[in-house]
Every structure is written in structure tokens, then in C-alpha cells.
Image 1 (cartoon, rainbow, N blue to C red):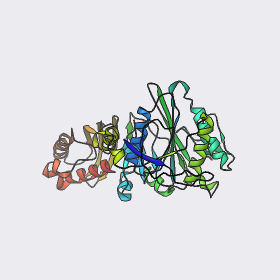
Image 2: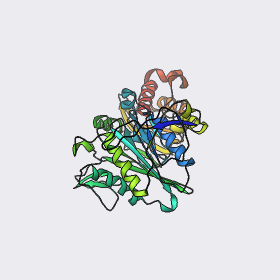
Image 3: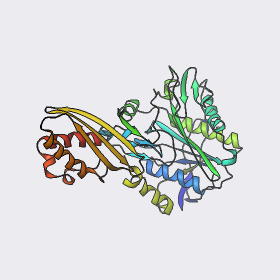
Image 4: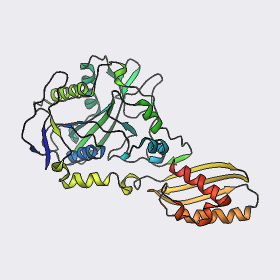
Length: 373
């Protein structure tokens, strides 16, 4: 079982007392604050609570993660993420188990997750909880017709819907409904690294056409822009209070920790192992087509790559180069060699030795770089 203890954090107006003993957690508590900043743990813990907590009881989870990019269940990571920037930063990306768009997490970003019975789940009502929390921090906010939390014309919270002019996001939300249970989870940008966010989520692949869900690119800003004293602790405390008032809950929050007690739970242990696996992270990618073009000294080359579930289905070349018969022969061999390979994970050893030499080698290096970016 998962080991927890009541929180010892002091928030803006409340003290959560710690106890010397370690308690065995069940999914029956109403409010959880995760002390872990491991995104693989937090996303799995959220899913465990969602699937094991009593369906009739409201539940709140709050957590923060170390820097990472989190994509929606039905998204294409190569469309959403700048992989060159991701590797430079040394950050992982994670495919979550809910829908919605791509978001950036770091310790300046607070994540909230509100679980409810499906019969009483109302996106507007859960947005109101977060709105009341923000207002209690002294910010004159409101909700628009699309459940965005706004300050004047500046959007603070949204559901990945098209952005109106002169508005800025500080929060994004996604939803999941399974059988008799539903949740609304979202992010709140408090003091996040907006420069890192911009670099990592700027893929610039307009010619990549995917059957998955594409994120709506929108300008963002931090909550501290409107109130410099707002912190993770203050926002968390405000959300807890609003949640308790909404559902008449008098339980104090509990702190969940990533320890032996947590990882001994089979569902959590297996879920944490699944999230970084190729089969989940890349193998769940919807079908997509990527068309790219490059000019070489001998002519122009156009390539169309088709992929499904992270596997290259076909790679079609066209060109206007001189000596076309030899070029055709070389690219046909390259095309055949790529079929059935994992997109973005093809190394030189998997390609005919000639791909490392001459004209064919130029084409392969260009193509390899494009797939890995």
C-alpha cells in the first residue's frame, strides 16, 4: 500500500500537521498533495486514484513535476515537440492518459486534478472551483462562455480552445470520462520558465499532417504577472479551500510520497514503467504523413513519409536530379530499408552501407535529421 502522512507544509492560512507514524493510504481520502516531483509517479498516481477511488466521492489531487513535456493521449509527439530542444534540455516527454493538448511542466507550474461521479460532472462547475481559488488570492478574475478563467481580456485558464486577440493563457485543462467516473485536470502557470516552454513546444512542422489531436498554439504568461506574491503553496491552499467548500468536505489534505509503499502497489509500479516505454510514448502515435523538400547540388528532392503507431509504413521520393536512373535505384533501396522501422529511431546500421557514402548518404543524413527533430 502507499505510504502517506498529513502535510507538514504551511500554506497561506492553514497548517497541515504531520504525524510521526506512517499511514497506509487507500484511495478513499478526499484530498491528496503529492510531495513527489517525478512526473511518471504523479501521472500514474492520478490514474490509480481515478480508477480505484469510490465513484460517488469527490477527490482532489495537487502536484508539481520536474521539467517535462506532457502530450495528450491522442497526440503526435513529433508534431507537438521540438525534439532537438528537448534533447538539449535533457527533459523527457510523457504521453498522459487523458486527451487534450500539449503542456510544459516544471516546478513553477502547479497541477490540479478534480475527480467526480460521472452523473454530477460539470466542466463549468469544476472551473468555478479554480476561479474561486484565484479570486481568493486577490485577483479580479472571471469565467467566459468557454470556461476560460480571465482577467479583463487576459485569459488565465482554458480548455485548449482558439484564443481571442490580446489574450494570454496561464492555465490549460483536459478531461477524462470512464464508466461512472470523470475528472478535470489542469495546469496553472505560476512562475514557470516561459522561455523553455516556447522552445520545447515550437516544432514548426506545418507539412506534418496527423490524424491525432493537434494543440492550439497560444501566447502564455505566468500568474505572478498579475500578483507577484502568488506561490505554489498559496495557490494550492486556495484550491483546497474552494474544493472543501464546494463539496462540504472537512478532511485535511494528505501528502503522498514516492516511496517503497507506493511502488509496491502493482498498478502504480506497472504504470510508471509503461509511461516511458516506446510502446506507450511513441507506439500510440496516430497515423501521420510528413512531406519535406530539400535542394541538393544535383537537384531538388521531395519525400513523403507515412507512419502509424510509430512505424514507418512507406517513404516515397521524387526528384529532378540529373542521372535519374542511378538516383532512382539508390532511393528505392533506401525507401525499402526504411519500411517497418521505428520513426525517429533508425540508425545507420539499419541502412545499407551505401547510405553513408555519396549522394545517397546526403539524402539519408537529411532524412534522418528531419525524423529526429
